[in-house]
Every structure is written in structure tokens, then in C-alpha cells.
Image (cartoon, rainbow, N blue to C red; front, side, top):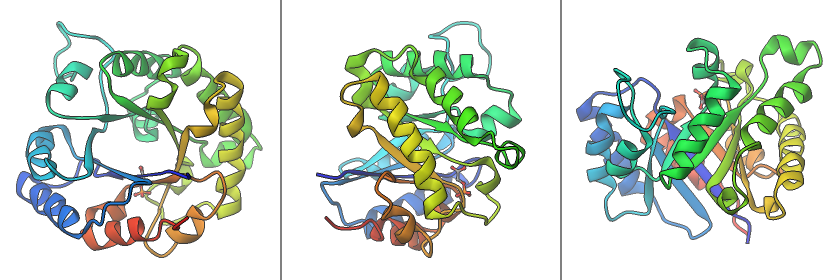
Length: 251
Ligand code: PGA
């Protein structure tokens, strides 16, 4: 059976009360489907409040980031165990805003994947090329090196807790979406890299992210190697996010 993963990445948005309101509206409008996993990624301070809203629903809680040390003198950081303790089942790792605005390297990403998997989390590893890299014909090289670095240390038995999000940097928050064909081309590359690394790699979910809206989700999600969407801006409106979930093709 084909499976799907739809994530709402709220980034540094919402207040405590608007986070509760948004999660409540999504919960109220969500029609669970056994082939679709939905995860909300609120800001750290609201994880507990959103968890309380989602408890007893089929919607999972996820963190936008995790630190790569287990505990200790790392002021301001949040460990994987803390996220599990708060009820998270997922964490994003290596979002392009962290790579490009906070200077996260492939090595940081590897270490974050290590601690997240060790703590029992599912990990969504974000990869993608910048506009400059695409224009210079470096999309495959860039994505290959990010994916290979991410896969390098993942134990085979953990491959079912890994997903990828292909998010071209030029498409994030810009209103400029990759065409379904552009997305599928890179997803196929990621799929090949995963399959080369793990025999069960065919099952690994690969989301597309970058200006996904209710209007364009349907055609992106029909591409054979697109297994879902990681949604930023459009996940801040319950009706838009629910419409994106509603556009997941039925088998
Ligand atoms: P966007 O963000 O949907 O606002 O482009 C996607 C993301 O960064 O995950």
C-alpha cells in the first residue's frame, strides 16, 4: 500500500493561544486515513500545549530541531530525550533554514540523526539545493552529498524511522514551487540513494516541501516518488492545511 506523510512546519510562528487554536482546528477537521500520517511541528515552547490538544487523535507531534548532544552544559539547546519526554514522535533535522541561517553542516545533521534515532524518534531529514546551485547544474551533486552524509551512519534496522523532505531552497517561502517533474526527478535520485544503502529503502517516504499550497498539492502528490508534503506557510491556516491533506490521492 502506498503511504503518505504530511507535515506542518510552523517555524517561529504562533503564540501559545494561537497554537492551541490552530492544532484544535486541524484536529477537528482531520479525517484519519490509515495510509496518511500527519505530523505537526510547533515551536518548542508550545510542544506541550499542542501535545495536549492532539492526545487521543491520529495526528503526531514533532519538533523542528534537536541538539546533537545528549545532555549537559549546552545553554539554550534541547535534547532528543526532552522531545520524547514532551510526547514528540518526530523531529525535523537539517531544515534549510538551519543549514543556511544557522550554519548547520552535514556533520551536525549526522550527529542529530544519531541522537534522535537513539532516543526512538522518527527523523525527517531535509535536503535541497539553492537557486545558485540549481542554475549552475549542481542540483544532483548537492542533494546526493546531503543524502549520502545523512545516510552514512544510520543503522539498517532504523531505516523505517527515516524520511526525507526534498525542499529546494529557492522554493521555500517564495511562492515559487518546483514543478511536479522537477520534484519527481530529485525524489527519484533520493530514492535510488536510499535503496542503494538499505535493502528496504523502497519504503522510505520522501516529502516535497517549498511553497506547497492547497492549489498545487494535488498534482505534486500524484508523482510516483512524491510521498507527501512538508508545508510551511500554508500549514498556519487550518483550512489550507486540511485541504492539502485532503488532496492526497486515494489508492
Ligand atoms: P513553505 O515552507 O511551505 O512556507 O515554503 C516549507 C518548509 O520550509 O518546510
